[in-house]
Image 1 (spheres, helix red, strand yellow):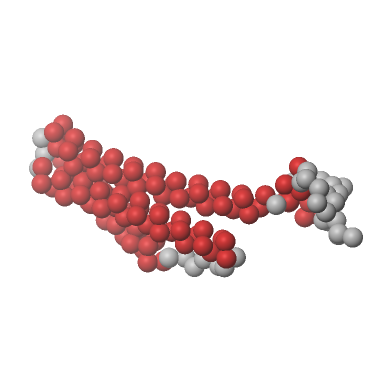
Image 2 (image 1 turned 45 degrees about the horizontal axis):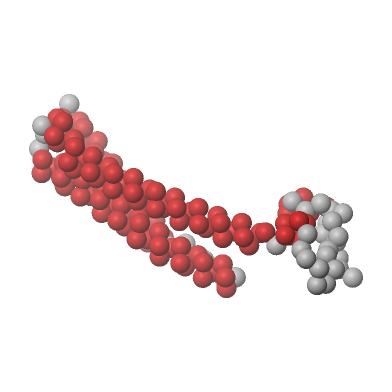
Length: 146
């Protein structure tokens, strides 16, 4: 006989405590599907994280275009300085989009193998350093034009 989940574990999984397990060979009921949905939710969360990295990369590329091309045309500033700043945002965007794919694949492999996934501190350090450098450069450019 299968052991019923405790009230606490049932509350966490969204399965009522009095839900009976389906008989062997029976079609899964809603409660059985809910019990098996944790891996599915984990994969969907990983997919949302990938999409967030992708959106951030596309946003950085949009900022690259705005800073590198549109801003100099609007304010008549130094085209070379804004172009260099725009290239920096473009590099950040390309890195984020590329790393999103690498990270997504590593997460899927780790999830399917039930292995821990180490944090890529080099990627976080690189992204943070590049983001901070670009933010400081942008602030300097804004102050220089004021």
